[in-house]
Image (cartoon, rainbow, N blue to C red; front, side):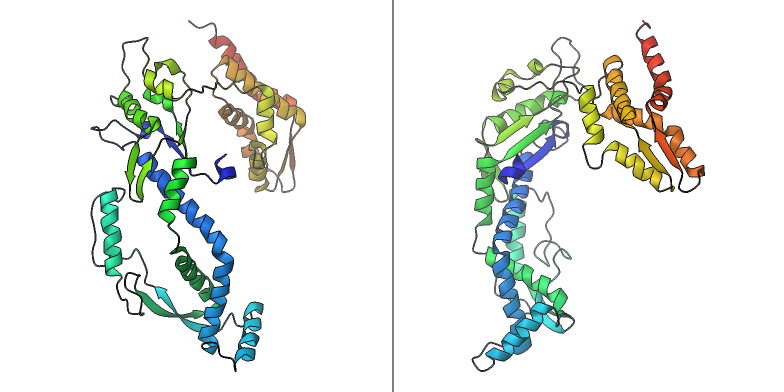
Length: 384
């Protein structure tokens, strides 16, 4: 959904946050991280829109270095150089290019360095200010406020990409990327909060969660979901219209164990059904890099060809669904345990086989490998 609409999207786990006052991250960090993602998405979008214009500027700039500024008399010579450049005949020729000095070698602002949390808006603003101040008038004749440059000699094939980045940055200077990014987050941002059940404690029992701050995370998330203004290094972000999606297994607790206010702010509730035998069969066959393909490619490194009959794949799916019903429903993860049991001895035998050998996994082999697992699960029902 986020990809279709070019919407800023972030997935976080509720367990990584703790109540304010305890050691851990603040929930406001969710929006700050979302803003970082939005800045990258927005920059990428505008970069692609102006890439063709930037490529034309790169071509002209390389021609200026090779032939000098364009004049009426040398127009024909310049055009012949342009044709040679497009055909790649000049790629090995070396030219001198003014490039920004290596960023990241020093602290923020070149000679200055700032301690503290770089996600703090005040620290980020100060670092940005020092960067601009430190960049005034570099050795390469840079303008005041731009990063200092240095002259480097490189082949045209390498210089083309370097100059393209410089030209794209110049074209993007006229666009307020921060404003565009904030608008994208406020109007179409999506936050997916996973493991929401891990910050709930059951009301049926007096026992509290092992994490003393778990309940507090719900209280901290509440204003974020209700709608508030978060201060980020790019500016203030309003969360009124951001889409929040929360998910959890809810094995030990129920959705009704969440704070009533939080339940009210997550009005649409969807309960997913467990995976059926047909669903597990699709998982085994439809993805490009499915579990069966992984095993086939792994055994191929020994020079042995591994094939799975369709009946065997159906039996693997049936066994996985049966184990999920009788032991514990762990979803598609059960396929890993079933596949490991089948391949346990085959993977060792393959190393001793001659190159060009073939192994076929059929329904009988699957039943034989998993027979002891099913017996154990049957007995477990009668143990008190």
